[in-house]
Length: 635
Image 1 (cartoon, rainbow, N blue to C red):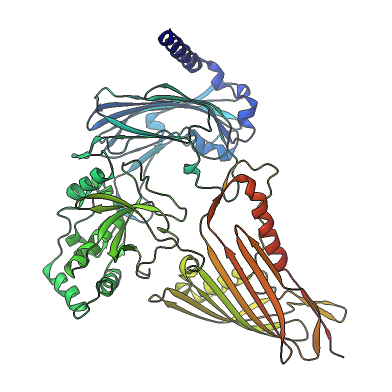
Image 2 (cartoon, rainbow, N blue to C red; image 1 turned 135 degrees about the vertical axis):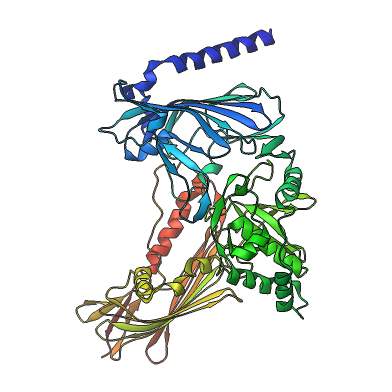
């Protein structure tokens, strides 16, 4: 009896999917369920993606996607695009375009798609090309039916399922199915299915129906970590003629080391001798690593090269030594070879690089990561080197590869570890200023800013700007100061201490406002928080503070002769789970005031219910940063 019920359920699900796929309703913009288009720039009316595993080295992917577009921002959700290279071949490709009533108005064949190189601006060579639909609508809404068939001659990169591809897109129906005719064993993982209307038709067949568009909210975690995602990988795969085993990260790392890295690390004896001479007499291995890292930075530059398996296999270290350039893989592998020459062990490391924090999935081994860095083990810890930068301090990762899970590729296999987390005391901005104010409300000032950690990464690079761009930078940085003139700029980048120091002499005319015989001004001149996070009547998403930091400020204000303080705001202190804030104003001798301020923000993941309290915390900071001082004549 239970088996009969299961059969009937499967039958009705099949009939439902089949009936939906045959309906002409999906072409008319007027027949979109109203709840799906309320928060949507586009609605995916129907999508069916079928992935057929034909053999160890071949996958066929067929796709049909019908999308109704409501405005210019919704155009990108049509997804009528296909990349191809030596491992991907576009067999079929077509687009049909319908007006708002569902009447066909245009047919675009494969030869009519725009065909361009997919080479990025920073790449010396890639063999990627892309075909895409370039349709300029006469009016909105309109609907596009896009169909394609693509054959992959590599099974290392398996097409996963993301039924939702961005904010503000509704999903009426999305269908994903794997047909494993080759019988190769798969590994799969479902993520975030529970919060969405997703049905499992069979073991490798899923359907998502009637998913409303997701509205972007401030401080939202990474989009990919919130949406449903079906991960798939083959336990036995092939990457451009190189077979691999992938039961776990140990297997995958072992395959990478043996098949992609082994034999690529030869460097000339002349280069080995040179780095040995540079490090002669240096007993500490980390000090030797610093010398070699600086040598590599001075000798090479970053240029992307992505061809076939070259997207994963590094250039030969010998070629990098001769040419002086490579991509992240080549430069990382080259640095590893240089360190080996001076007896410093290191490990090639895969990571998702970027300002947002994204982990290698420690529970699911597959071809992950978009960047390579180098790990130097050090007394139970790890130092990570960014080998593509000619300016990065040794071991500095803040802002691009900090605080995330990465894969170390070792001779014995792969290992997942975590990169450095920069806490509030690691990412400090200290601003000090001596300010001379005159009786008109104008002032001159000598301002010093010192930054470390993540805050260093935000400021670093100002020193290489032109004088004009530096002037514009500081005028924008202190856009709260009217009539600002930058008189002198001095910058020191101490890479050994990872300390960035800026000294700026400046002046402002009529900074303080006049009210009769009084002068009114805000003492927090140089580090003011002005933005309050958006208010949501009913927040839908959890929120996240990615990185911690600490700001400390001390301003000494010389008041004009003949003026005294009539009133000033009392000291304030605020403590919350998100961080703390305090400021203090105190009178000094010789008609001076001292303004001190400390603002600490802590990293963390929080439920949506806490957002209102976080916003209140920020509102208090904005309010207190506008605190005023009133000066009157000293009679």
